[in-house]
Amino acid sequence: MSTAQIYQLATTERKQQNRFRELRSLATTGGAEISLDGDRKLINFASNDYLGLTKHHELKKRAIEFTEKYGVGLGSSRLVSGNLNVFEKLERKVAQFKGSKTALLLPSGYQTNATVLAALGRKRTLLASDHENHNSITTGIQLTQGEWQRYSHNDLGHLETLLRKSPDSTKWIVSESVFSMDGDVSDVSALSHLATKYDAAVYIDEAHATGVLGAEGRGLCYDANGVDIAMGTFSKAFGSFGAYIACSNEMRHYLINFCAGLIYSTALPPPLLGAIDAALDLIPSMNEERARLLDKSETLRDQLNKLGFSTGNSKTQIIPIIVGTDAEALSLARYLEECAILAPAIRPPTVRDGEARVRVSLTAVHTDDHIEHLLSSLKRWKASG
Image (cartoon, rainbow, N blue to C red; front, side, top):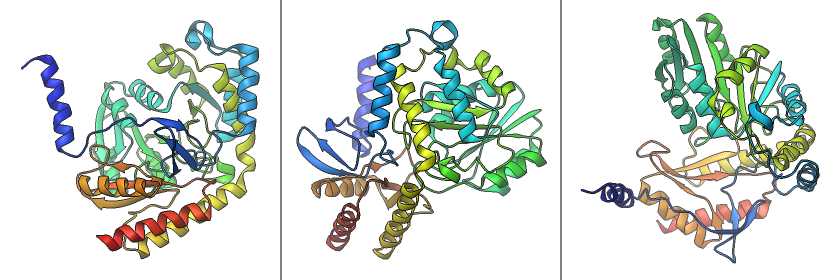
């Protein structure tokens, strides 16, 4: 079998498993409605733009200002010639926002998890990772020199067993604060307590909590002691792109010297820095939008459960509709698209076998009419089955 045939066979197997993925062409995106395939308008329940900032006038204005002043790119990594002076300003604002000593900006959320965790996992290091952590976390841990152990999802007893039995001199507890496919949350305070008990450190991915949860949208780590690294992104509630690490001064120095994602990547472009700067100014004042979003999320979950749908342990704006088989998830997603709703089918390997789902992401810009249309469409689908 030729090299080309081997890869073609892998793709064919994905199709046979109902797990084949394709890129869709969008004419517009952002906000509660999008244009698909040129002219079809759909209600967008697929976006992580939780506060509706992707098209906010202040983000666009600041991005243009930074473009006109600094250009559209920086041409090198931050350690060579790309460390524009506004990076330090933004890092001070992020540190204040997260309540940390300092912060470090990196190019993307995926790359941050993958390369920061790879840098943390030295020899004789245990990395105890929640079973449902994002693929970027799994990738980073697999790149380490340390020992990787997965504990059962949100199972503090299992985690404690791993920490107690580990002979490693350095230990890290790694978890998301809001899990991206289930919409449930971890007990950050309890994780910190275990870390103190077993002389471990804590790494929390705040990607889906930043901007939405905690005091003034500062995430679930803001009021919790004992979190050594809080990671987050600017590509979800912040409306643009990029990522951050909130940490100590000593950890910042370490990562600048050992994190490949910072050392070998071109710095974030000025337009994004401008958008991030504007979002940092806006988000603390958006309590009304956050309250409305979380209230609508609770109402939608309740209504879905009354219709007989399983939403798992979701407690946030991420609401899975768990249907079971890959084929059924695809069928539901296609039906919803016929009803002018975009809500993607999520299948293994992203989720476990038998837990395929349609993932609904609510945002502050979804109206009551949008949500009612979703519910009425799901009710018809349920009745037809």
